[in-house]
Image 1 (cartoon, rainbow, N blue to C red):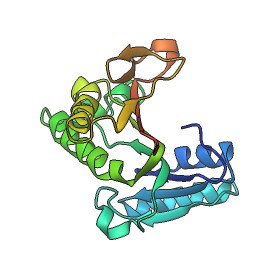
Image 2 (cartoon, rainbow, N blue to C red):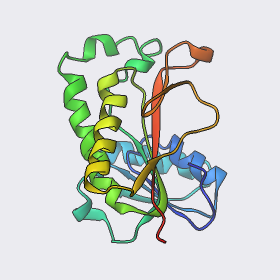
Image 3 (tube, rainbow, N blue to C red):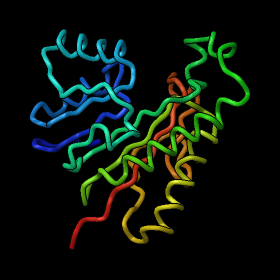
Image 4 (cartoon, rainbow, N blue to C red):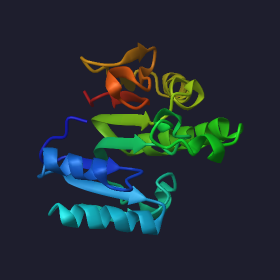
Length: 199
């Protein structure tokens, strides 16, 4: 994310608040907005921030329903830790294997793509959007990001470019995949897209 003082940052699927707190600890002078659709889970965000002596603007809303909550001011950074199957954390949560259905990856991929499509217009010129899941399934990861980038290149040519970290897991065409057990970590995926700056 590389947050900077004074930036307006959106944590779009914030609960339980660990990422929001980390952003504020890294950059206490950023304006962080944390959204979650579940009021009980958003309460956990508030409790965790309070425990750490941090504060963010909290909002209970569907992040994809931007007409209901967005004030029209663009964000410099957007983090989408999207709802996913959780397939990358099965070793810590083995019940995931019994709680998921065969249809879940494709249904979740539709939700994930919708979040990207709806939140991208909220990103300021020169801003960065980070998309991440704790999944190992291509359908939720590179598949979703690939569709999103293809749409951007078709509809807004030259307006977006992938941003790649200097240290990564298994680099893919669109993003980075870390598999369970790599460096004794859980499985997760992340990708980043930057909006072209105004010239």
